[in-house]
Length: 344
Ligand SMILES: [Fe+2]
Ligand SMILES: [Fe+2]
Image (cartoon, rainbow, N blue to C red):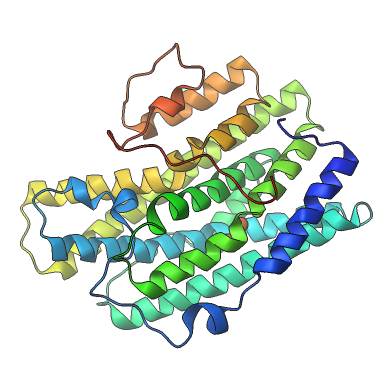
């Protein structure tokens, strides 16, 4: 690990998480919604994440609508993954109940934050369901997904959670914050979400190290298999949701696209979702540093091979120690900056 994880040092990091958590704490209506509605004359999900710029045949208003459909799914997918993250956090907190009370408090606060985030995303979805045409489909049930995820080893679930919590930060800093043309309410939802996510990654790192210390090589081999299974499962969800969202967009947009253009839209939405929910987190240097410090060469190769099909066939570069760093799908765009937060 890159951090000192002796008990005293770990307690200090848990304590800093509590301090940040108290400082940034917010309420859904008082701080985020404030009686406002979404502005449909503006973009929701920025183009660095939605990849709508790759659809050269599409008009600006149609690109904006596709950003809004993807922005709706962005809130849905966060609510979906936070169902299992909150459940796992409750389990991890319980494991500290008769030990480090500082760790217990930090993780209980994280559970509370994730439950409140889900409430915020449900409220945003209700707003969009009232404002947008009927026909939008959520293809996966959060409880059913959580049951599958939580059947896997803690090591794998925490590693997946670290990926998610790091891409949350990277998306906000690199794409959402700098874009001045986003709906103010949509942007604020993800501003306030980001404020409470920055310290979660620190807890993931601490818990991943704690879990890893319990594993034999054989158990870690199995956990790597679990992590690969989870990524495959996430990709299955993304494939179904990308198809549903492309169909919904084509049904409501009013522009008569050709069959080839409709296929291009579906392919681009899937590419965008893989970029948003898998690849952008995996590429974060902080994720790579944490994960690849724990696995041997053979395990690292298994992870790389499982991820390769999701990274758009950018040629492997054997001389680069972490080949995923060479797989940025947005040629010519800088990769998001390394994850950083006040508690690292
Ligand atoms: Fe969250
Ligand atoms: Fe989180």
